[in-house]
Amino acid sequence: MLSVLIPTYNYNAFLLVKNIQKQLVLEKTPFEIICFDDGSNSSININNEEINTLSNATFIAFKKNVGRSAIRNLLAEKATFNWLLFLDADVLPVSNNFIKNYIKYFNSDKIVICGGIKYQGSTENQKYLRYKYGKKNEEISLNKRRQNPSKYFFTSNFLIQKAVFSKIKFEEKLVDYGREDLLFSMDLIKEGYKIEQIANEVYHLGIDDNALFIKKTKKAMKNLIFLEKSNLIDADSLQLLKLINKISKFKLLKAAAFLQPVFENLAKNKSSVFFLNCMKVSYLCQLKLKHE
Image (cartoon, helix red, strand yellow):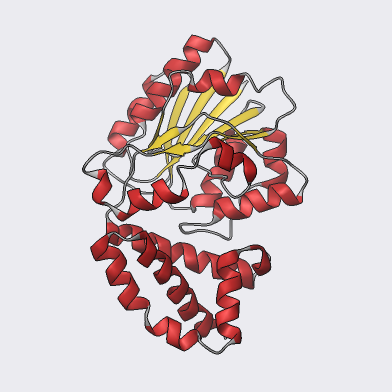
């Protein structure tokens, strides 16, 4: 009935799998949990091997990295049930009824369901840029998510019919971090599928330090340019790309790009979402210059 699919990379997913497995057993529904490590070759996989001791749960460590999109597609191919629940390894359900909340949609006409994200506001977390960014851009109220379901689609916590996923899949040209959720949600809408937003959140536990988060953000901006250049997305459908194209039109790319290191340092040192957004714009201007 339900295949829970968890991609991981250098992260201990055992706590998540144990939590999900316990809920599934209580619901008495046929299930499997599949976790793939995408070629991290990490010593942490010693802990992940414990997943194989749980009933109906499997952990496999790949020797080579295949990329964030391809690993999810491989998980879906391995799945045997008609409903797929994708979860990132660094999350944990907010509710003990997390699985029950998804199961009740099995007999409905909903085919893509997004549960949402929350962040734990510990004193340690609050000093990080990743936490501040997540609170502002990802921990969104259900009412607001329902106003724009595709905008707030996150691959870290969603349920989808396998038949639908098989038609869309993740774009495997996107190997590195970022923007695979954007393209996937756009493809869903393009194919006429609706995304239903519900209150069934997971806590995002993996809070990167500022330097690593900025590095990942820059990778995501590279993916954004790649998507535009490959005609996989329409630049006019995204405010950020529309802004960059306006800056280009007014011959201001070099001026904006020149400020990128300044904004990056301010974002890192002040844990500032505002300066992170400025860095995104200036870094995209740098990338645009390279491609012109």
